Length: 129
Image (cartoon, rainbow, N blue to C red; front, side):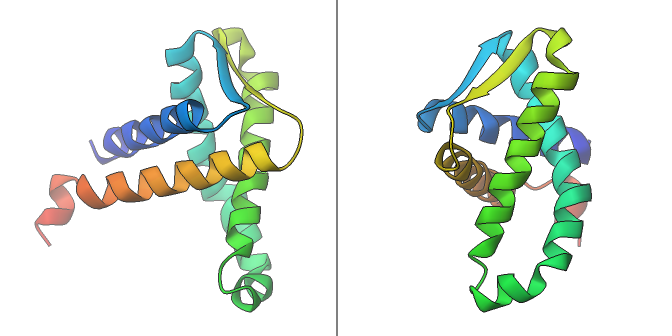
């Protein structure tokens, strides 16, 4: 149940990025693209994101955490690339304008929305503690 709640929060965050960030669009089957994108983003953040953030701890500390935003933009680029190249057969793709900034702003929106929603929506397991 906890996984489904986190997946729903991530999907809402990706949908918010599609709505709020110019140059960050979904084409084809929107629901499938957002659902798969949220799964891929979660997987990439849990694996590659952890490795990158541990490796860049010096840069993150030096910039007071702002370098994490750059890492998140790169992770979003990897996630979009994976979705468009490996999972496009599902019927939905994410199209992002050229350049760093659409990824940066989309990653920022995804982080903020998922953080706020995670703060408000807590699975029953965590309330018992």
